[in-house]
Image (cartoon, rainbow, N blue to C red):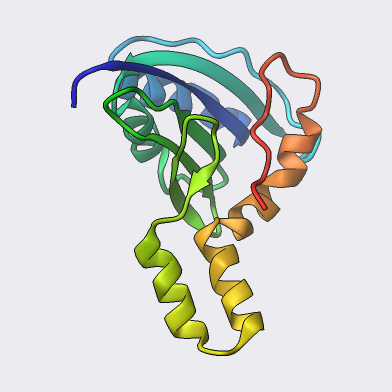
Length: 166
């Protein structure tokens, strides 16, 4: 898909030794060299954090998320703004949970596809608690819960954080 978009890479926690490798992998995904301003992550001893606003072609967010996927001890989020020809996206990664992806609308809200809602209803049947569990899964609640202490520790940063939906 053609077009230019923008987004943000939030590295919530990375071991100090991994930081240069994160820069290299993210830069490779963006097709350019990048230098991040790393800060200590107060939520985890010895970890660093950074955020980087990027501009690139549609799909750059997915490329960044893929480049960083599966790295031990790395917690991150990537956002990609929608364009007139493409949806936005949000990727969240934790070491324990792996990657979660959600489409986003023009205001940054997660979009849960109709088929996913229907699946949740089918699995839950008449069990309201099970429906609640399925919808939390569809919204990436477990990823939000795990990342929230790391987001909170970074308050005061110049970039406005995305807030949980729901």
